[in-house]
Length: 213
Image (cartoon, rainbow, N blue to C red; front, side, top):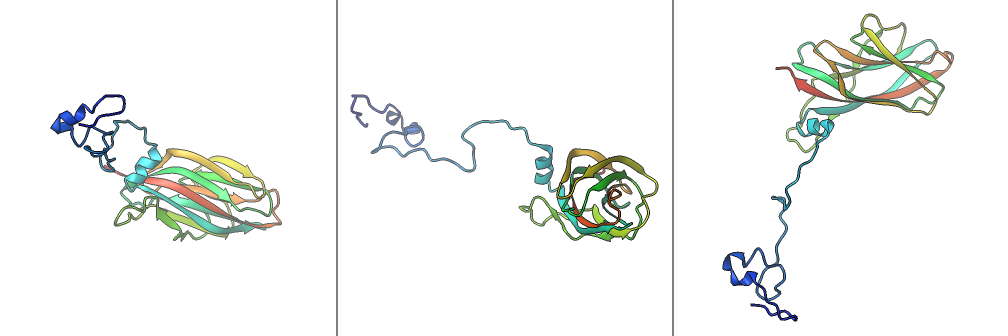
């Protein structure tokens, strides 16, 4: 038993079951309680954002298409394309258009359209959760084309955004744009206000893939 200066004593030490765990003050007869990294000391509840939840599940991916050149009568585009045999639905989370510095530009957002030019697959794609082993591989393809002539055909032109030089267009869709196999989410870049200028930019996407039951 440890006598404290005020005349009190450690009551926990009288109980051998509490000897190691409950007495935190006795310098001579008890071990201090040690924190645990495996078992939380508190009971708590958290609200997990959907993007974090999908990243923990290994379903969230990010990627971009760089050096998208356009202008002088041409356009460029980048898209998320869901192949027919993917077995997943595409949920578009976020998209950005950056590094357009030569003049004002226009970004048209198209759903399920057929764009002009020959699609190229971007290799600049990665899963968001790098703690998984093995790393998951995306089923969705990030594709792009530069210096194309003509406009997209078919599909839906959902909305249009305009940007100034050195500005960034960004929108967080929170997964609400959903495309089944065969569908696509496309950003079409042009500079109709300064058609004689050459321009270039970068388009980035974040998305998750949900297996089709």
